[in-house]
Length: 438
Image (cartoon, rainbow, N blue to C red; front, side):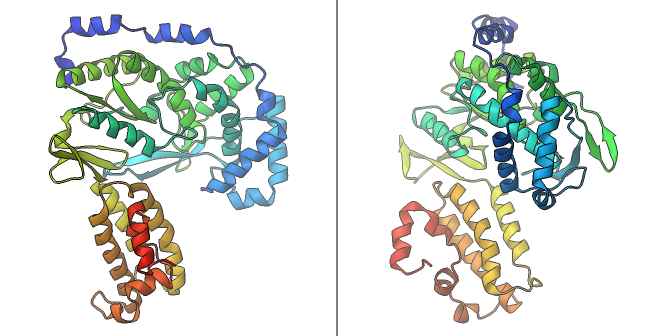
């Protein structure tokens, strides 16, 4: 591993130049703490607002098999019980329902913990009270699951660093982050800003509620469940120490939840950044994944947040004759096409209008995420492929005369099929003039 190339003396000097995790904690202890928060959490207005957020996000039911729709039918009773139990300290989170989901870009599975609907409402109510307390303290290098911050903002930060001369990338991965977070350390970090013992106890109960997998209970001695409403906020609180330490060391880190990378000007700087990151994460009880971490030159390309970024000839954004490019990573393209294929299987018997209503959110969501990348040719190819999928679905065969009865202009105009190219800002006026808008 590249980090091991540093001498022990160099790493020791790097560590001495910056505060330890404990010193950072002492600095935070000077900040005024928030008291008496449990009343704000079970306040009827806060609980109702939390339920509205959970209902809008939908999702499956937990171990009690109470669905969103069932909860909605009896919301007054459920919310009253939740408020009363929170007020008198009798609320106890239930174990999450453990399921395995596909991990993007890998054949491995990712464990997902699904809390009950009531537990999700409780977590959302806690998050709504804690987020305004912690949000002002978070670093500018953190972009994941924060108000008014997004993956696109993280990408713009990285793009600007590359245009400013950054050429070496620390492309790193934290091994099993959500499964290895220390409960004690996490609660201690929350306690640096929160002095309400009932809230701290409630957070610990959420962390230690355990999980049910195929009816078998599994205890949780570390980690926070992926799928929990409050997990993103807790992960940002936990990794804020990492943000501070790396930023203080002068490294240009960009983090989105547990995904992060650093843009450096030289390979030597990248090696120091990786060594420092390993040291900080080790103090937090975390470790870098040795097989998924590398130092790479931008000319080789790297992937982050669904994009592949690199240098190539003949591109618009040029530096010294070579242009930067950003395109969707292949795994993202493949997953998008799989979703379209699933909706356009020939045995699906629905009217054309209904099929397009199902396709449009998938096309629009994916296209809006990538529309500012170098995607014009890709979007053109995908447009043609989607139209052929619709023709194949309609006429039950791949080779057909769909272009006669369902030409592209009719699909995009009369039926309102989302046109990927039209999502690109610079292409909107062109397609309006051609009459391809609905």
